Amino acid sequence: MSGQSITDRITAAQHSVTGSAVSKTVCKATTHEVMGPKKKHLDYLIHCTNEMNVNIPQLADSLFERTTNTSWVVVFKSLITTHHLMVYGNERFVQYLASRNTLFNLSNFLDKSGLQGYDMSTFIRRYSRYLNEKAVSYRQVAFDFTKVKRGVDGVMRTMNTEKLLKTIPIIQNQMDALLDFNVNANELTNGVINAAFMLLFKDSIRLFAAYNEGIINLLEKYFDMKKTQCKEGLDIYKKFLTRMTRISEFLKVAEQVGIDRGDIPDLSQAPSSLLEALEQHLASLEGKKVKDSTAASRASTLSNAVSSLASTGMSFTKVDEREKQAALEEEQARLKALKEQRLKELSKRPSFSTTDTSPISTTGGTISTAPAIDLFSTPSCSNGAVKMESDLFDLQSTFQPSVQSGSTGLPVATAWAGYSTPQAPPQQSAGGLQVDFESVFGAKATGSNSLNSDDIAGGILKPTLAGSNQPSGQQPEKLVSDDLDSSLANLVGNLGIGNGTMKK
Image 1: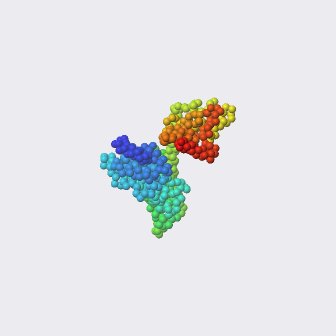
Image 2: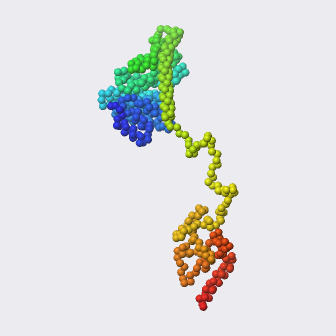
């Protein structure tokens, strides 16, 4: 099967709908394409492990979920992606994996879809075991052996005897799981398993470098150890010699598949006389008869052994530095390419210049200093003096609302943003302003003795208006009497005259 399957596209689309960019990228990194995960997807996931707002458990669960697939390609690429994040991602990703009770349960995985599925399933089972062991090692010692500081003042060189005797076996277990991948050059037949092998190759170099420094520390302390400690130390050293042979075979496979010889360290074994000296020292502590050996000869043997192992460590360090330099050069080349692409994009963009209509444009390189218009200021006259048209409470006719004939009697807005009851249109007469009560109250006064607007109620309800529109020299009619008593007397007199007329 080659290329992305329909299932891959549907799964990615589902995560696009849910808005999970992390899960979508995991799906894209673990497609059915028979090739290693793409670098752009791995780089994005590495970036995610460094973002504090990214949910690391969710990222890990997405990878675990992909390992439940029936396709060997998807499962293998899920393991490769996880391994890549453990090596190059933020340490909190490894910390989370180490905190889980179980990781990959693929000891019985088998893809029966074809012959290649059978072959690759074997390596998937071995690879998952190594990743599980790598996480367990971190849980036991709280650091990654492939990332520890090395050298004379490194972690493994400065450990005390008790801690050293407990730590080296943990490295041995992880190294055993790595070497159990046990692949030959003719089995590296596709991009997927090749990607896994490259990660294992880099881990083997760094892991063995830490292992080697632990052994140097052990040898330097060996002749000062107690009997039980010497026994443990001797067993550890014998296992180290066995694993050195196996790592040499592993590195030969790397050389056969085209890895640069300069990227493969040289392994220098300690002289065989060292093992003999270690065994004689333990036998002497146990009370057995051994041939006498002077302190000078033991010191010489130990010095030669440490020197050989130290040269191996230097070889690992050179390889590590070369890899770092290559990674740095690759990153610089990538940044240079991005910079050139950015400059090319900017050169193609049309230039935008400000015009006179632009609110931020300037004319002749100067900025206009004209005062801003105050929308709430009082308008000024031509002579500069402020002219007040009217006082707020001056009820001149200028501010009276004008009502069209046929008014509905609804309130209307005034010039002062308020509401007033509409008045009937004024009618000029010799007797003063007349009010049409029918238009106001909507009904005629009843009774045979109907009164006109100048009668009883007329003088009270008529509004007082300014005389600006009356003929010159004519004073506005006084509609309300100055004195309340005289007004009441006038009212009673009118009623009395009316009654007298009716009597006659």
